[in-house]
Length: 565
Image 1 (cartoon, one colour):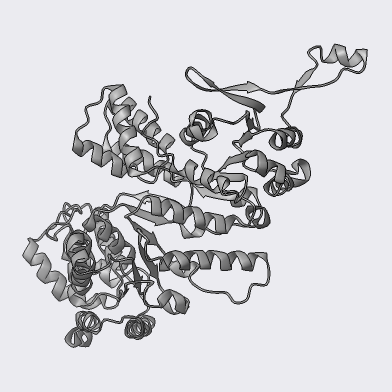
Image 2: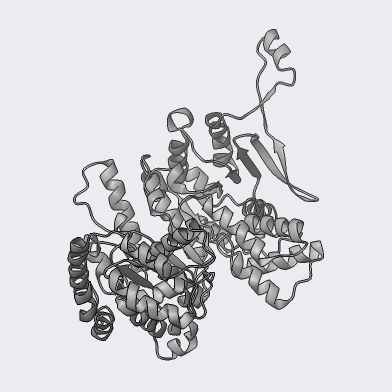
């Protein structure tokens, strides 16, 4: 398959820096087999390297070798170091008088001479770690970076690794050209999909090509091709659902991100009309009409903060938002960001941000954002420094004006967030989710009974007609569920269904709903204090007065209902 579709700007960027004598050491951050193969072909065929005397390749498994052009691509030939046979015994042990080099320290020593005496390119691949006391790896890089002989000869060392920070300390990276390699551009994915379809004889029109190109965003070229091939093996075509499933599996392996296919939209959420109207007007409308937004020089929404007590639908709203705007939904698994290993937490956050941006535009959901939305004071140790590093990384990402991801964060305690998180420019809107008022409670119950228009939820068999059920809920159930959360209202319906099931009934009736409601216990006095706190938070953090007024009006407690409790 032709590789002409691959963008080589990442290689040329590093080579340009080398020609400018910034450093002879280039670290390309990629482990994509297609990118590695691309680099080898480039070094062996591009005019930029036509005067090179030697091209060496080192792999921890294969050892040191020379890289030469072949009829079907680069060919690796093991390098054999000549060993003088000074004794008869040595001659019998090494009849050829040579030995292959695998140990990294020996390899570095051997290549050192070539770098200084001839124009040499030394490529190192599959390097995930290099214990300094065993290999002298970083010492060699620092020495080569400032060696006048290497500079004069035009020699170059190219390192291919997942992340430079895991291989080199900060001091060594100062001597190194570090190039972050894009996993795949839109054009590369499209060309690879076309080439694969041609090879497999898969029909591919413009719509299917566009769908596959968007679906596979954020993946490297090897992953893209693997998913295409597996989809073909399973369905003899590039099936969008299969590709989404396989992509989700790949991303999930990182343990810090999950790609989720939202199952619900706003029709599946009862009530909360003030929030739905606000989000539709200022977020969905802008995302669905980007040209109009650009005409008025309106930036696309970058972030939303949902705050309020547990069980009030914050997570469900985030999923529904992604469904409404038809964007991928990416869940940042906050509990897996922090690690007991030094440096790994910061690396996890960096990887999460990089991958999320590559898959954007998308909704990036950060549940319990207060996990790393608070400074912990002056760093006083490695763990403290790591926490501060994660905080700074996330804060920097949140404030980037060119960020493609739309971050939706949730918290139960907005006052625990650092002031820097709440500053204008971080989150476009801060939206309170309070316990549902009477009308919202009615609509939530209707949704979970499957009676709400447009909902995807299954209809519950009922003894009454729809209108009769609605009247009964408003009259008998809603007054008894003051300060219930959305999750508790869903659980109430589930309990009523269990009661009907236990009674071997064919349909759910008024008595089951009443029994489930009367036996469902919440701490009413505590909930009243929570409501007061929530209202104070809403007034403190919500900066749109008209929106706040609408929310307060929607959540007023019906005085007549309260008297009847």
